[in-house]
Length: 83
Image 1 (cartoon, rainbow, N blue to C red):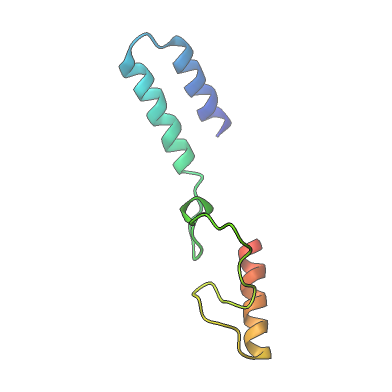
Image 2: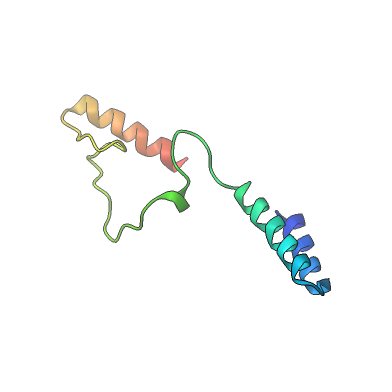
């Protein structure tokens, strides 16, 4: 990422044409997209804004915790997301 940022800043400093600026911008965008999270949980930038704390007793899929066994599964899900 540091190399991409440095290269992009250098390209912008030396740019004399809009096409050069566009090319530097595209390279930086590609580098940033490469940092996005992949896996079973979405990238934080893909989640909607939430102005309240999430319900700790609701699974990621929206199902509610209904038993002690469910809570252990939800607890594991919370730990997995945090890691």
